[in-house]
Length: 135
Image (cartoon, rainbow, N blue to C red; front, top):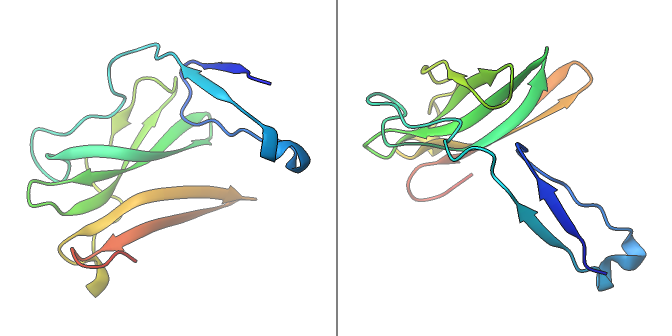
């Protein structure tokens, strides 16, 4: 069975197929963007001057919060923070919330944030990269 799924103004989509049907499942996903403008963009200078990408999104107190990788012109990444009340127009703090601090994060930085809420606790995972190995 082939199904079309239309997503609009959506950050992520999960598709769950019953295990017994997973082998024969065929799915086509069609995405229609409602706005061609990115929700976060590189800054003109500073920690996000070379790029702002790969966000993790979560809802908190009526806001959508993005934790994203921001990269400077030297290629060092940090984790940035932006929030929105309408999930389309975001305001970035323009100050990283996580910066490289350990030996395995030096030079390359911290990147690829993922956030999960369990109860009232938020858990953040990320990749540390020293331009040789990712951890």
